[in-house]
Length: 300
Ligand code: ASP
Image 1: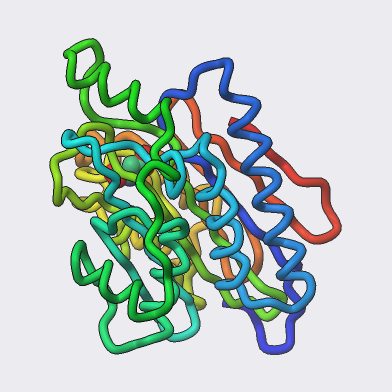
Image 2: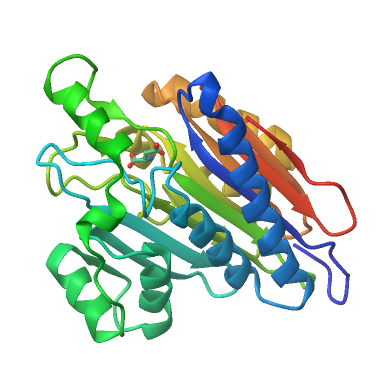
């Protein structure tokens, strides 16, 4: 926990999804992550909240068709888009999520509206659509969000030329403000060829997203069916809260996730003192760490 009055150097960490990323696409994944982290940091430096920064980073990545979130999201076995997203703020453990949302440009904004509305915490499918409409969001034309790459990928799966499942390219962000307040946001199209109604870890508190000013914040990516059983995001934050150094906690959480549920994936974390780390057990996960006054670290 940050000490009263202690100035924290603000930081934003983003990921562009754990999993296989073709070599030819790697540079694009990293560039997008770097740009999102830097633009979100610029907001934080101007005094925006950690939640503003995390949402901004995820919004930028949702708009980038390279990632499996918002525009470019992967498709269900019926060829439709069903989006999952969540946001969490560490001060009072406020949380908002939507799941199985039909096409809307920025699911992360709708999740944030759920948090701010406060009546319920989580809306799915038709109820999520109605919530979005009632809060002034315009539905998107499916055509405007379904990329030809996503369509081709589904066709390969349906034709038995590729295994159904992991799309890679889920997006997430965690941020810590100068006041030591943390937040997290995560958004995804899920898995390629998923069944209609399937919900992954991304919109679940403690699994895909967690933020607690007393411990830290985390955004997860990987096989959602495993991440939710391990409550991966909360697990790593509990380790940090128990005094385990941030990078050690991230590595330990991924090791435990692999050991206990044969999990595959990655996490990004930030502590309320502004320490940042990431860990993964997949061949790739694009990431960027943007910190005020330092050069952005990025890679895959
Ligand atoms: N965790 C996401 C899901 O299961 C997928 C991913 O991170 O690539 O929906």
